[in-house]
Length: 171
Image (cartoon, rainbow, N blue to C red):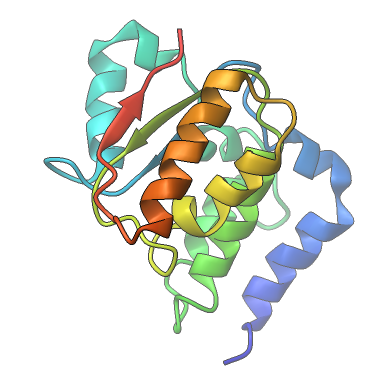
């Protein structure tokens, strides 16, 4: 199925605005990527940890970054992306939008990258496996520990393992 016009509009906006793409980044050593489920969806666990642990609160998630970027017709880039989450079919629209934004975020990561990856992580269902992992693995600006962790995740996915259940909070 083809992309719907609202999806095309956001992707065109990103393509035509390299300065915006450059802003879809966390400061060095603060990128935090997440996917899957531990006891509850990982994003919910991170929100709880952010309220109670200063080390986690110092990390930057893609939605936080997107909230700081103005977007035409929307309060910010996060609002624009979330507005597309309701499009049907989601896989050909919402999933594509989040893959594009997450790929840019991973490509712009610098230094140490933190991870909170749970179960249910497959290329067909999670942006981390479909996009962030391969983009980050090609990113020459991340540190050697991050590269080692990425190699672990790649081996897990290559062997068919979807319960990665591994977290790393870079100091």
